[in-house]
Image 1 (tube, rainbow, N blue to C red):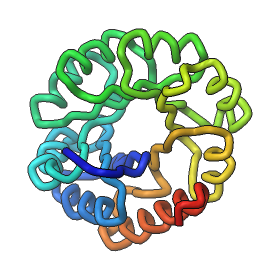
Image 2: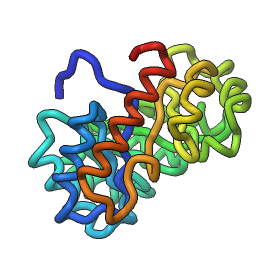
Image 3: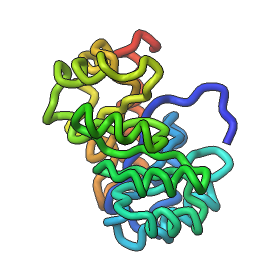
Image 4: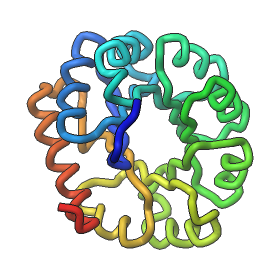
Length: 207
């Protein structure tokens, strides 16, 4: 996937089914979010990832969330996924992800976890749950990380909070229930995605 400019937003499609995955994925992509995550605790997640890769793989980075062990990393890779997102920091998962040439986004909450993840080769860090540490906690963590570290806030972050988090130095965000809830139509998800993208850009004076 080659893009001149990609928004630092991950669309999290937790609970999506294979049958609806492509239509919802197209709606999210059309709004400007071209990184898509299907958590592995969704119904038939590998089939959803396979379908999204087949339909959108040239235009989007597609992969899995809630990846907990190296075996799951290999399963995601086998269906074409190239993104691995986890709720925790497990170096063996990060190392296997890197070995297979995929992007690795482990979940961290403390400086120890953050540096362990970076040492293992993480592409970027998922601050999770971000609501637990808040903007001030994030700023304290950001202050000790290498300046080029990509730090995304995930968990309890929506349009109303974007300005404070961006001002505090967050690199990007993962969008979960604010973007998609099981059963919502592609049209509804598309409208939510457009609103979130507009809010993100406005929070950074990019509108």
